[in-house]
Structures are given as C-alpha cells and as structure tokens.
Amino acid sequence: MSSYQEILQNNNLKATHQRIAILEAIDHAGHIDVDKLFKNLRKHFPTLALGTMYRNLSEMSDKHILLEVTLPGQKVKYELKKEPHIHLVCNWCGKIEDRILDIEDKIKECEEENDFTVLDSNIVFTGLCKKCQDQKKV
Image (cartoon, rainbow, N blue to C red):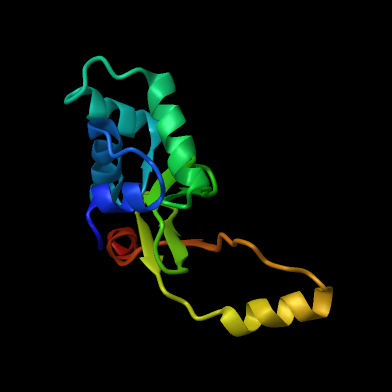
C-alpha cells in the first residue's frame, strides 16, 4: 500500500499529522468505531476535538479512502478501502474478519435482472469463529 501521505495527496487532501494518525490507527485496528479511535488518538493529540475527527472521517469517506462498515448489533466501524470483500462477524466475541468472495457475476446478474446499478455493497455473515466454537464445546 502507498504511504498514508501519498493516499491523502492523491485524493487532494492535505496530509496533516492528524489525518495520517487516523489512517494509521484504522489500518492497525482493521475495523474500529469512533469512540475507540478517538480514545486512541487523544493519547497522541490531546487537543484533538471530536468534531475535527468526525470531519476528517467524513472527508476521507467521501474520497473513498475509508469505508463505513455497518454490522448487526455494533456501532459503525471504519476501515481502509481495499478490494471488495465480505465481513465474517462472530456473534460471541465480536471478532471481524475480512474475506474475499467473488460475487461479481451475481452482482451483474442482479443489475441486469432488476435494471439496477450497484454502487456499493456490504455483505455480512454472522456466526461463531473457530475459537468460540471450540470454547462452546467445553
């Protein structure tokens, strides 16, 4: 992946220290909600205002650098934009995993059958991860 600075500059956004820190924190976490992100960033930027962080998240989402991920029973989370994927969410521990699933043919079929253009999708499978399955057997 390009550096965070390059990603921002390529999307006509100023590469501020706060924006770079936001991207680093989200990349490190994989999926993170606003509360946890704000708590993590305040350690390094004690004067960071919640409104400023929301504004940065909104700008980077508008530029398709970040994606808002809506998962059942959880707060909206943010992740870095990457190739299309689905989310596997464990109902017990809350773990979120990204998985590549080739559904392009199904999307095209749906578009053609319904005279519809798909702009985005959010596919979530819920269940139990391997670790939780093993613990429930005990």
